[in-house]
Each structure stands twice: as structure tokens, then as C-alpha cells.
Image 1 (cartoon, rainbow, N blue to C red):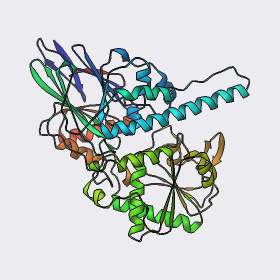
Image 2 (image 1 turned 30 degrees about the vertical axis):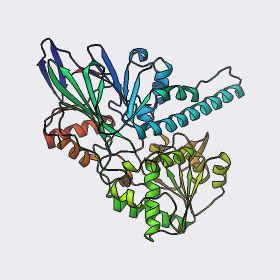
Image 3 (image 1 turned 90 degrees about the vertical axis):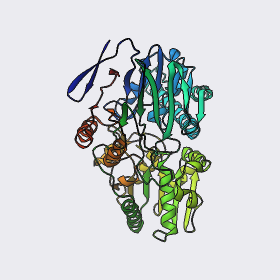
Amino acid sequence: MYNQVTFGLSIRWFLYPNGVTMKIRFLGAARKVTGSCFELVADGTELIVDCGMNQGRNSDVLNQQPFRFEPAKLKTLLLTHAHLDHSGLIPKLVSEGFTGRIITTSATAELAEIILLDSAHIQEKDAEWHTKKALRQGKDETFEPLYTTEDVKACLPYFEHNAYGTMLELPGGIRFRPVDAGHILGSATLELWFRESGKEKKIVFSGDIGKNGNPIIRDPEHVAEADYVVVESTYGNRFHKDLEASIEEMARVIKETFKRGGNVLMPSFAVGRTQDVLYILNRLVKEGRLKDLDVYIDSPLADKATKIYMSHPEFFDGEAVNAFKFRSAEGMKMHFTTTIEESQKINRIKSGAIIIAGSGMCEGGRIRHHFKHNIWRQECSIIFTGFQVPGTLGRLIVDGAKRAYILGEEMAIRAKVHTIGGFSAHADQGELIEWLSTFKTDPKVFIVHGEEAVSLEFEQTVQKRLGLKTYVPHPGEEVEL
């Protein structure tokens, strides 16, 4: 049989006589950043890599759409890491009939549980709020959450905890092994081997690749060989600022804000970014570069995630193993708030507070309430340390909006806005190229998990720098390997 594979502007044909053909379908994170989901199908064997939630524009509509496969027939889900854009639709998958294996690392399974429970809680509260609003307007409408807390609890028994480097046998003769992606605790790059026409082929899913020198966890592990690679491109067209320069910029912004009499607000992802920021603030105080800090971590999810981080020092790099403590350094007070009442008390503080709260893209969570009390005050500052997806409130603010609707009220944005890219947990263009360059073979490269323009630009960079055959798939596209 003849298989058509498109790479760049060329079309190449390969002859595979009397063999099993592996197909890959790009069901999410194709020419966009979120909603990671890739399906592999061969000779009746079907599995997916990730089952992520869409975020940003039209995300509610996209997340409600039916899956493009039958969940009840699916036997295996391989999960790269716990962030919602990779794991967020797992409860929906199970509620619609999936009863197979969810294979991931132990740390990812633990983090996914608290992230999904938090997601369900937010959706339940949002549905309740929209229903009450409709009733007040005289409308007979009832809003349902995408999934509930009970749906999350129902999916947890299907998670299998595994260690990096463990080789597993999957249906259809597929072999699988996770290696450290260096992105967040437990994140993995996936190696899969499959047989085709009597020969063993290998496809690698990068997952989200971490940048070198992340404050806590180890640098990404490189893979030497592959026939095909599915690689992320979130920062495929830019370079991060040096980490030490970013740390110095953060210290300067905090000092200047406190001198003006304001607060520092940090919208932060509860898993990964919050722990990195706390580590850095602790270090700045220990080194005497900042002093007398009051840091409020207003996120029950971040509190739980921090405890999971501390229970897995086996994933830390050498410096973090020897030096990292979430206990406050002398001169730094850390306040983890869990209740609504504790969160509300923070809003009485007019100056001298560092407020870290979710969500990282300002689409929900408690950060919006802190914006309501601070974003209109020119003496305050907002520090963004992570990627902001188009269509989110965070992206609107980063792009320079002067006004925004927050909790139903239009507000002026007068606080000073700072984007400090050196804290990103994603590899930048140079590090992505370095990761691809270590393959001893010349794999065919599928570029995903990036804004369309970014992925296309990164494709040109890969072709120019490494001479590899590349392709940027379209959403829903199927390719025969």
C-alpha cells in the first residue's frame, strides 16, 4: 500500500508492502497552544497521548464538543504531565465510557488528582453562578459543569504510577518508555516503538520541554534516536531572558513597587511556576537582595502542589536537593491561604505585599479578586512569569489594554505590567533546537503546541538549522507514518 506523508512543501511517497500502517491524528494543540491530544491507530490498536483542555478563545465551546474517537473503545491514554491543557478532559473521557489505562509518572498522577479536582470545583461554581444569574434575569436556564468532582473521583482508579525509564508493553506490540522532560514535576517525554512491515519504528512525543536551569527540577533528558518526533513549539520564535537577569529584574520591580506604596501581584500557575517563584524569593532574601517580605500564596491548589513537590525530592536537581526549602528564610514571611475569608483579608493590605494567586492566565481563580482591588492603582505592579494564550485576560493585559472587564465590572488598568520571560518552564527556540539536534538519526518532525505563526516560523528555523523534514499539521489532520 502507498502512504502519503507531507513535510513542508514536498510530498513524499513510501511503499510499505503487506504491513501494518501506523496513523497519527492531531486532535489538539495543532496550530494552537492548548488542548493537547494525539491519537495513534494501527491494526485495531488505538491509544491517545494526552487529553487536554482548551483554553482561551472559544474554549468552552471546544471543550463541550464530542471526542473524535469512541472513548469506550480506547484502551490506553499516555499522559505527559499534569497541566490542564494536557490532562483537563480526562474526567469527561471517563464519564463518556473510557475504562482503560491512564499511564503516567507517579508525580504526574498525584498532581493531576489535585488539578482536576480544582478544575471541577471551579466549573461547578461557575455553572451555579450562571444559573443564578439567569434566574435573576427571569430566564428558565440551567447551566451544567463540563464535569463534576464525582467525575474526577471516578477517573482516579484508572491512573497507573510509573517511574522514568520503565519500559512497558502496550496492546498491538507497542513498547513505551517515559523520560524526564524537565518541565514540571513528573513531566515526561514519551518514547514509543511499533512494528511496521517487519521493522521496528520509533516515534517520540516531546511533551512540554523544560528549559535548562529550571530552579528546582532537573534539565530535560535527551533522546538519541527516532524515526518521527512530535515536538512542542510554544516559544519556537523567541529566546528567554537569562534567568539571573530575570531574577534581578524581579527584585528591582518588587523594590520599586514597595517604594511607591503598592502591592505586587503575580498571576501564577499553581503547579510548577509558584514553586519556582517561592524558591527564587527565598533565595533573594537569603542573599540579602530583598528583605522583610510578606508573601501571600492565595491558592489552595498551590498549597497542595507544594506539598507534593516536597514529597518528591528524587526529581530535584542537585542544587535544589541540597538547598531548597519552602520554609521561609529569616526576613520572609509566607502565608498560604486556603479559605475565602483568608483570601478576602489580603485585599485590606494596601502596600508591601507580594500576592501570588491563580490562574496563571487570569481566566479564573482568585487573582481576579486581587485585580479588582489593585489593578486600577498606579502604585501597584503585575508580574507575569508565564505564557499568556490569546483570548485570555492575561494576554489582554500583557498586550497593553488600558481597560478590561473583571468580575463583571469594567476597570482601568493603571498598575505597571511586567513580563519576565526567564521564569518560563518551557524551552525557548535555542533550547528546542538543541533538543532536536541531539538525535543521531534524522527524524521527520511534526511541530505542534504553538500559535500557528510561531509553529510555522519554528518550522523554517528547524529546516534551516538542522536540515530536517518538517510538517505543521492542521487540527484534526490524519497522517500515515
